Length: 572
Ligand code: DON
View 1 (tube, rainbow, N blue to C red):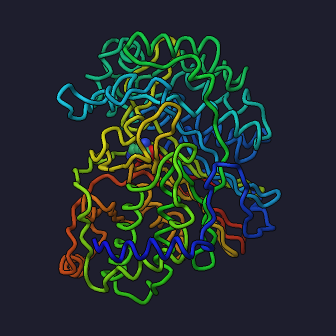
View 2: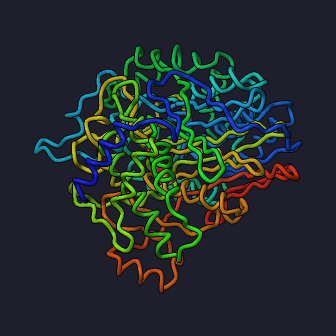
């Protein structure tokens, strides 16, 4: 890393900040204005990671709901049928385009640390990181955001009561369903951990074993908890019976939540980040996600190059160098905007990007040599993203998560609530990587009431002729996958192509380019190696779900990642 160029770029950015991307520095909700779109598609498209969830969304649209009611149905159904990825005990981030008034909104339903959080709980007696408390059991869980986020989405933007939009999830949890191979595989993989807590075993290991293939599996406790939310809104979760059960269960297993932590939780509206690129407006996630800042920074760097005129090796070189610089800033600056001051004006400024661009050599990789690095774990395919466009042109992308596979693997007795293990998304131990190999600074250190930094980047791309909702799970690779999806969409690709495209990823440290098999031909790989890149095969590439809308003929397309058979993109 060239320090002098970096400091020069920082200084230039600070002096000349302004223009470029819009941002939410203070968390105050400001709907950002949007490129005008007068048409309505007249029909709807939904792409999610599970066909039952996609169908639940259509069921609620048929009852008179809009995209936001459908989103409540899809998210709550995913909590039941895809609990390894997201759910009632987790959190989400949502990017919304509201057709009426042409506004863009962001909802932060991210988990937050309990007030009694103690960083020592995540260290072994010898001072090394304790990966078990960070990733398993109640100490790994933040206060859930999903119930509050869905209640807010329904109340402010939906047309239907929660009793209607939650009905499919409640019905499926009560009547049961056949888990798909991915859920069965996740339960098998985590069986040893699930056996550590009786309520986890009772939910996921009926008769002491994972459900058999083809067996009907039910979750009556989760159905009951959703029913309380349907009746009482978020009070049905954060107060009363469920809150008491959650706190009792967490305490009995060594955790430190209080009733006050739950009562204090609020989903928040924030100003989305918007960035203009090649005639499109990209609306994406602000802090406490790092995704939108990184995507805006990368696009601001890339706008200085004519990528279409380059061979593949050079195109990839410039994209990777932009990724490297954006992830460096992720590690150094970003955290919960309610707790840390972040130089967003600088990071999102085109002048800052100009400075960074000057530090990129035309034919050579810049080594990331600034921080010690740890190996990134394969993020698998937990966490989930879905995209919806309704007949009126409302658009919503939601990325929702319990973090690692089956979250903390801890179920709170009597609630059906599988708690997340999102505390690992904090920089729990300075300069030690989290499960995605991400490093963090003080900005993302754990503190009571603070939200841990996320990579979730639900994004809406709005153009004169075409628009799209794009997102994916994938830990730190979410940011680069969504970025590549946006670039492919702007290049004119269809929803199906975008979901299927081969991918690559760089996150500053470790200093390698993760590559999907077949993403580069032999000559490109050769050129990249000559420029100084280390290419490393990676097997798991998220689960992208995309809906596109062509304004010229009002055609919608919905596509789910062809790497994952359980997903469904559908237009009706
Ligand atoms: O919020 C985040 O960035 C992570 N908890 C997301 C985890 C994830 O995508 C795991 N999956 N593949």
